[in-house]
Image (cartoon, rainbow, N blue to C red; front, side):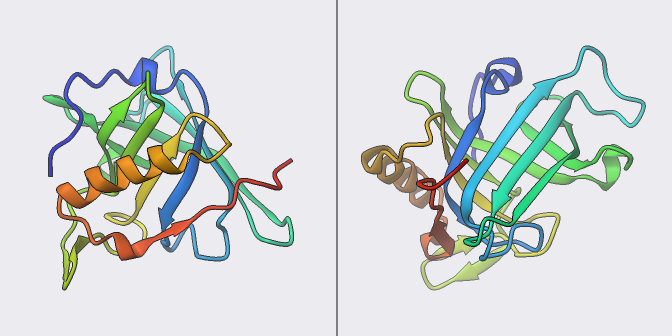
Length: 178
C-alpha cells in the first residue's frame, strides 16, 4: 500500500468531504449510506491524548435518521508518513486508535481515496480491510455533494491499482440531503 506523497493535513482538512462510495464497517453499516460526510479541523495544539485533528462524521439512513459524531480525533500514526493517520474517540490514547490512511489525494481535482490501514483480507478480486472498527473501511471522497461519475471511476481505478477488491464499495446517495 502506498500513501499520498507530500500530504498536508491542513489543506486536507480545509473543507468538507462528501463520501460517494464506502465499504460497510461496524461504525458505518450498510443502512447508513445516505448523505455521508466527513469534516476535519486541525487543532491549535496537540491534545493530551496525542491528537492534532478533530473529526466530525455524518451519515443518514434512508428514512432520514441521523448518525453524527464529533467526538473523534485524529493524529499522525507515523512521523515519517503524514498521510498515515489514526482515528479514535478523543478520550482514548492514540495507541488505541485505528489506522486512517490517505492513499490518493488531489485537492485541485477534489478527491481522496482513504483506507482503514493495510488491507489484510485476501479475496478472489484483490484485498480488503475488515468490517469491524480498527483496520476497517475503504472510502472514495470528493469535495462536492454532486456526484462526478468520471472522478469516482478514476479513484476506483487507483484503488484497483493498489490491489483492492472493489466489490466492497457501495454507492452513497447524496441526492436528498438536508
